[in-house]
Image (cartoon, rainbow, N blue to C red; front, side):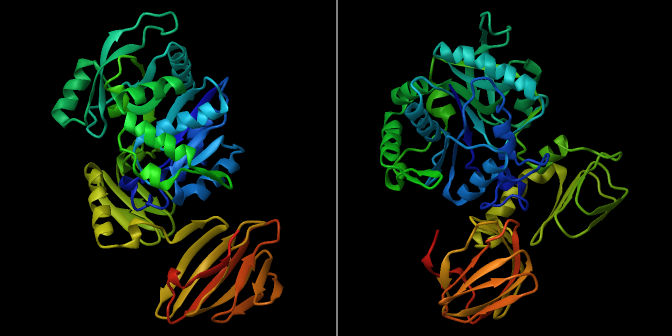
Length: 470
């Protein structure tokens, strides 16, 4: 039995303003109609012997991840919630413990949720090769054959070729993991032909990797075992014990095990891999027009070349640009030369230091029951567009400082207002006075869309008293 282990806890800050801390790139459809997470799951969905995925994420993204799996008809073996981020080694240890709860001798394929792979057939071939080595007790990493002197990736130096019937002459021992190099060093790596990019994709038996982790980082494994043993089921999720997992050392699987073990094997492959870690990377994989531009949304150009322009709502008009990035969202616009996109992180750091919400959330906020999108806000008022999924409901709640007015635009609403329940249809509305218990529910079979107006002396989230929450 092979369990895909999907690591979905990243923040994707280098793709700001599209990617935010509470809505990162792995949850977005950047390449095709599926999100990065969905593409990662589907990449091995038809692979013989594959089981349902184990997804590891943080608590803030849990409902979006469950919903995205549901939309592609995947029922994860487990969605494990990390109370705090502790890098990839603890995540692998937890996944191994989970897999061993289900199967006596499982294999794990560890996959970051935010990578793009063009050639799925070649990818599946190297995974099959890795399966053979894993059964022999090896720990496999998959190296990417480099196409450029990339300074944004770590590298792995090839060791000796491994001669075996199932390797097709491709597998090698691992000589050394090296950090992200400067340009001159990266050019030397590329020219030598002896280095691969570190993809962050791994494969091994659950028992094998746990034994190696216990050998090199026993304190980490002990903390993970306690966090897993004391964890609890919560709806579709498994919550690790916060206290125990917080005490776990933080380290990557590369540092914790792969750099130290004598059982490591690297399988290089070339399948159009890209970690989509920057706007330039998205330009590289995007469909280009005759001027080598990648364009999304409402964009008009005049004499623009080799640029990436992305509009989520408002029209972008660009003149005379070359090698530039322009990205528009409802609350922010990014403009950068293509060769400076790695500096986006500096902007995000400034936003965080200034406690700016643009680093955390979009105006569109995804909730367990649907979507809340901010339309306008001013002194003593706030206007949202709210979409409630069929059969879903908000918590029963009340406010001490604001009143609410709900106008149904589409669908049917069941409104709880104090002791009464009211059915509202399109073009009908309800007024919720300050201090009155209330709840909004969608009893219908299509999404419920409403315009929600808050008015009052204080409109913050702290003025929500939840009385009952499903």
